[in-house]
Image (tube, rainbow over the protein chains, first blue to last red):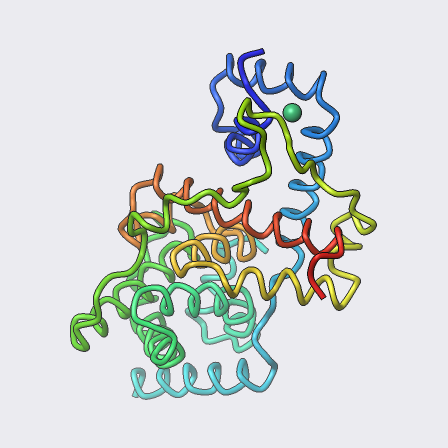
Length: 80
Length: 200
Ligand SMILES: [Zn+2]
């Protein structure tokens, strides 16, 4: 087995971001095939990343209004 | 929405279009400004950057995406401000690249010593549903070393391309990827500790 469990955890971002070489990708998958703990790790890691993607916060409405008002003002001062 | 249509609306002064871009990009701009010039002046910088966007928009040539272009403007605004205040650069220093987040979790031969806990909440939705767990994740992100937090926030939360983040923060893409992986691993470890019942 080319990769240990420790190696797998170190390569997991590269794996999910598609940055592993073809060969390393195969070795990574081979390890997962035989290792339950690392499969669990990868699933949790992916779930965590998906939760990050859903946790983006937008600015509050009041702040958006203020900024847009200021930008509109800037436009007008430029036009006149 | 089609980006070219959006830009036309911005040029025409459509308030709804301005609202859309502010809602979409403001958070990423604040993270970028904070990383370059510090939290104390980040909001200020982003306000200035929005005004700069309004002024420069007629000259936007569409060679990059609108978001990339806006982030470059905030990056430049923040760097000017940093030079004025002579703040030293923190992004991407070596100490933050090194360091093992999962120390003590492996046997000498590289097998798990302390394998991943069973996570009661294991889908992305469940991770966000539980207030306490959500708090653990937010806190873990806030506690990250600055450059790790910046890269994670911009790439994984705001969805900005790694390439743009690295270019504007002036770190190599390989360093950026290491920072991102360290950050993710630390947060995973904090979630795991919580699920194991080690944190309050
Ligand atoms: Zn394993």
